[in-house]
Length: 107
Image (cartoon, rainbow, N blue to C red; front, side):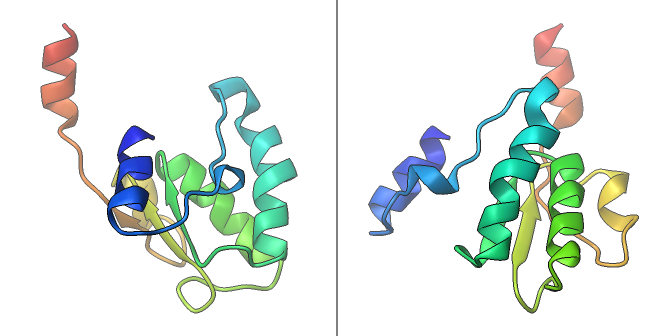
């Protein structure tokens, strides 16, 4: 989140906290349905950066439900690049992160 805010500042992009959805595992679907649906329906943004592929797929479903398409209407990037990213009719763009290295560091 800090990196996103810093990038907005560095590139002269207005940071809008209404376009950042914060959730916990238990509230993910509620947050997506209440807030992301409004953002999608009103086309308030042109793209999304998602925490992981699960979030990206839920968002993708919301986009399709409103009659929009990826990548024509919205772009989606996910910080995961798991096998889920290739299991939809639109293959998601993912950013790899060093899962094994993170696990080793955590241990």
